[in-house]
Image (tube, rainbow, N blue to C red):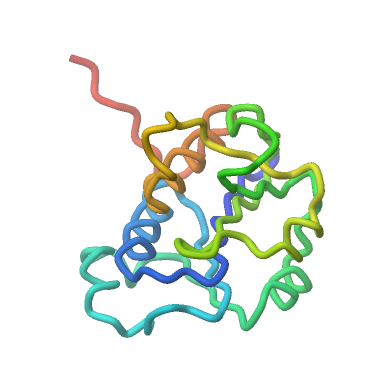
Length: 165
């Protein structure tokens, strides 16, 4: 079986505690967290580290000056890339399930830039929600999509199934 890789990519995140929570979720799921500049906070921010609890230093964290630098280094193929946006064409549960996946989220205030949406046509997905709210919290959305991506390819290392009762 091919090695399972999950990459959560945050493009210009604005809120430190969302990023801290997502980092902790990535650590729990065995995923790498990529932050694409500009960031709306400092990586030294105490609130960021508080949200990540005492796990922040263990997060596989990589930062990039821009999306082009990230893409050049990791070469995410279109079939491995999932862009999450509230206007995505397809529900997230229909996203591809491959051994290497890049789950890309935009900032809390601006979403994903049009240039990035145009770069991966056909790779936009959404989480269905009621009309009562505009959107889900970014850290909630990232957790939902990351764990759905693992459903068919659970990580081999560090996973502990629930204890039987």
